[in-house]
Image (spheres, rainbow, N blue to C red):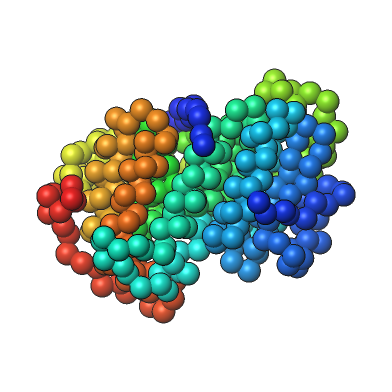
Length: 380
């Protein structure tokens, strides 16, 4: 197998009221998606919490208000030793969470280094939330990755203990394609994936289906769509919500994914080529290695080069250095602190604002990227 698990995450970390519902609110989701009192639903149950992202018109993309609501919930959970399970999902038929609302951030002007950048409030609080999720003391999180799960949505889920993919999962870290870098702890979990798969995903932004999300270990379990309401109902009435009890329920309702429902795994057949190409020390060397692939890997390598050629050269170079440094850092906190510094550099101007313009605002898909930086510029 390519990868079936990610490294465990490590410990220690430093309000808004949300409406509580008196009944289970996952199924049917359409009953709730038009309820606009809050973009985050929060329900308490005996020993468990149920949290739903409810911004369906934006594919549950995170804005600062949602991050603050979630932070309030997670702080409360972490101080409650009786809460053993938090189940997080998207109240939308299309998405768990499509990421951070970067289009809103890009509408604010670039700010030179040395001045306060208003966008940094978003990143600082988002990364603090990511760390909080990764270091909960007594609560295990289950994230249901139904639909689009990208960027900030990955940050909400990958640092928790259990990640359930399902038939419609679409998973990606697409940041290099919008002139940014894979943040939300990407420098922690991506370089710790086996055989350089994390480097491949970060530098290409490739989208994974349910099968691939499972086989790479980004999802810990696969659950068929039809089993989700039964599984969640079982958790609602479960008496044992310890890690062993949670795993017992998951074993009851989860199964190995099948090609018919989840799609083909197009990563595993190329795993040796992925490792061979993406362990190279520079973007130029990675590209050269891909171009030298022959035989059964040739078409895959050509398509991979095409994906990289669409990305920001600056983002590619920064991402490679970010992952290399992250692989040597000792904690998730250290990685997020590094990422906060990188994000501040991107908010000073350049490809991030151009990428958002081209891909999300004007949608001409023709970004005018800055030339590839020198190695010294990347280090700076």
